[in-house]
Length: 97
Image (cartoon, rainbow, N blue to C red; front, side):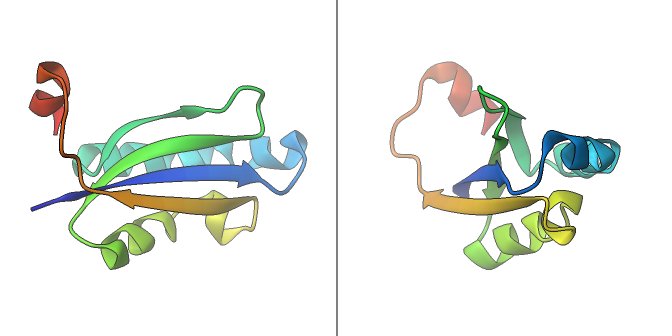
């Protein structure tokens, strides 16, 4: 069984600070896409943060994942985590998860 976690990031620092850590953040994202944990991610509009859909086995695993984000480590963004178990999905999404 898996659980989905919706990470909502909100920047705590100006965009100029965010951009200093953007390359490392993108490397972090790439590593968790490769491991199969991340399903999608992107910037919020307006650019005040971002969102990540993460597949994990537990809240503890999800916390360990986002604690690796340079934005989290360097206090660039706050994370709000919403845990949910999908009960319905369209056919395309079922293939993804």
